[in-house]
Length: 138
Image: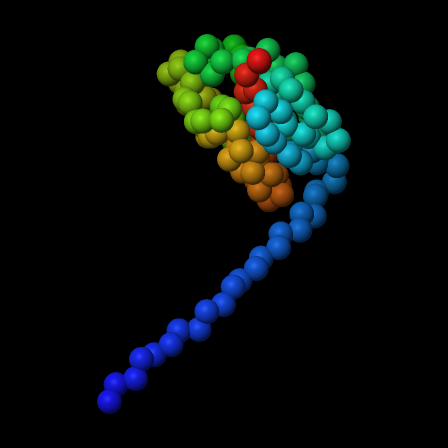
């Protein structure tokens, strides 16, 4: 007689505790039309780096981006740039992607939530990462 094997069922719970390097600026929360960087809640597009927050990035539409819009990002000399494009992932025009390729600079394009989470992970890993977050007005 054959017996039926039973598989053990268990749950694995993993808790991540961030040990921020220095005074690094982590993205604490994000939602429809806003992000919270440290204690500040921002409702406009912004650029976030470990030691810098540019709150007045005048971008509202990913499809209208040009290479010049990324000059503040290039000035920060990151090794990787994460472009958060709102609720859904939308790629910038080819000329923007070429501007990054000419600089041998990695550009990762994600929806806003994925961009915020990935930025935090890379920052925790002490990478030179910049998040360029597009928050549509209205």
